[in-house]
Length: 299
Image (cartoon, rainbow, N blue to C red; front, side, top):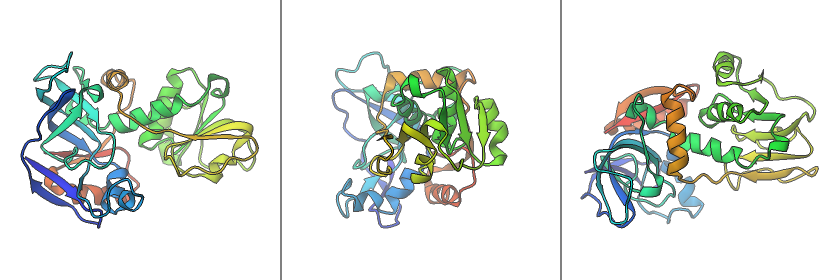
């Protein structure tokens, strides 16, 4: 099988490796689509090697989101069958073959069936970002949710968060560019702003854009701030509780999100597709910015 790996020195290499040996509680998935995320670019550039999350100089795979077909299952796996169409997110960093590959070993607990009406390309854009949005919203108490600001509201995490907050019945203000107004209206934002207010006015901010202090400054004394990058949140001030989501796989939750996508209740956005061998070009497209939706690699 083919897999794309990096040593964190701005390099991408296609290598040929044997199919991984399947173990208890694991599923081997033949990948049909893998989304390209900014975290993959950070891995290629050595961000996580430098942070000690991947051993210095070690070769690791890329890609967190995948969709495909179950090829085989390991011992102790139930409710998943060979031939099932599934999607999953691969948590963790130091994994040699990941989603940029022909096959991937996935914990059974991370797998969710793809419902009818959703193709693999679309399903591959859901796991990491929608789960991050859902798990970030879990950190917000209902008492502080009815005056919620979401920064980067038209981005991959923010766009899902707006819809999921609306599903919770929360009042949401979306911070994004003017060009994203129509998308955010359809996503369910109650208010759309292009500039952050000069004075605190929100009870809670979900800082999907990673703005840090400027987002924190919009929160009232005693409110809450939820970030999407652990270790990169601003310091607490004015009695504001500062937390960050640590995204993790959750097959049951992912199944709910995939059903929402299949029914059109959760917007699926694909910027484009490229063959697996063109992963470098796909990452370059992401780095250029200004695009909505995910680039998806097709093995």
